[in-house]
Image (tube, rainbow, N blue to C red; front, side):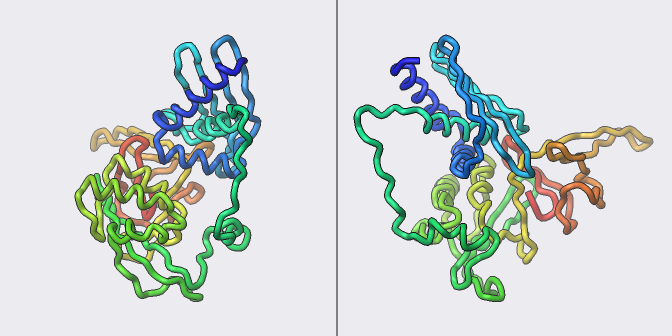
Amino acid sequence: MNRREEINAHELAEAFIQHTVPEYITDYGRSIESEGNVNKFTLRFENDVWTVESSVQGEDFQTFHPILTINLSDQQVYSECNCMESFTGPCRHAAATAIRFIKSLDISSDNPEPVSLPREDWRQSFRNFFSGDLEPETGRHYFLFHLYPEPGRLSVEFFRARQNKTGISGVRQEVTIEQILRNPEWCEYSPSLPVILRQIAQYQDYYGHRVEIPDGLLSWFFWTIRKEDYLYWKDTEIPCRIESSPMALKLRPSLDDDGLRFDVLLQREGKKPFSIVDEEPDENAYAPQTPQDGATFHGQMPLWVRWNPGF
């Protein structure tokens, strides 16, 4: 390995993150890498091919093994992983590995590394030590998202309310996209929210209170609001869950006197599949507890399945 090859590999990995991996997956990868979940990082060289491997700790004690192949001759970066998400393109685990690889390369010249400055608000640095993700602070204002799924479309209404000692206040203030764009400091738990809302508003030429999420931006939107505390099902107070782990969608055919039928099933990796057509799902399988109407499908690949009050 020489200096020129190292710089070339660094540039290819940067281009892979910036132009090949979707932005919301890159954000997820940065989160994985910053939390120290990229382990057993190895780098091998063979002629003009660099192979980067790692072990990424996922949810439910799952371990994924992404591999990046950087071909200096073809000027291409290829990724693979043993997760289900990788079947549709670069996954979050490959993104995290690429980010770790970029950080591992020393491409600085004679310039010393810049000294990282502390944040102006020290409370942001220590917030995770004093409060859990699901414990909103009393006295702060939070977003409330009401999700309205319909076959082939998803609409969202935006509200803000104050957190009291007994829970979120019943006084809800309707907010518009225009107000959110003018007040980005509201988006502490969803820092990318103004960016995605600006694209949605420009696409639809509408900056109001209730907006329909375009299919191509749905995954990015879900990833952006995943840490918000108050996601509600339609106009109720029923919590709406966004499942971050990928699941397999399966069809099970059956032939009877009424003809050919298909049962639709979801399956988490390493667990038994469960039907999203039957009214009473398997008690041992993951499923929301409140039964609702039939499942609907949203977005583009990776496809989102709305079943019960969750996605």
